Length: 95
Image (cartoon, rainbow, N blue to C red; front, side, top):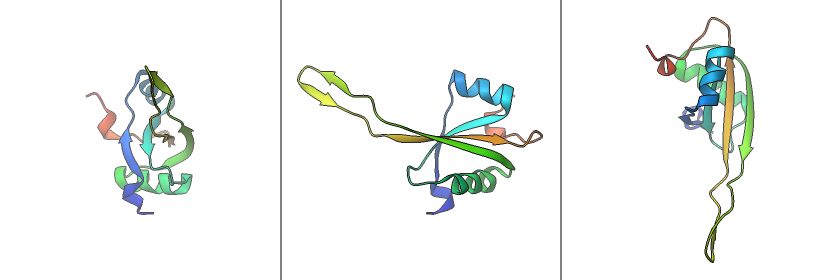
């Protein structure tokens, strides 16, 4: 897998912002086929930071029903990346 095709988008939510501020952890949507080593390499290459650890979770789409029509969004993978204490990713800075 191409290292740059691993990262899909950053996750910006109240929970991810709290983790970023308190624990120096950043959350990204990543490719389903990506493993933790590929995610760490992609983050280090794209943002020039040192990764401490990576945790991943695969979330299935919630089944929704509207009348007789039933749909289910595709599953996706999120990665929470902990950086070394002196590292930051500049795109998340509010300043």
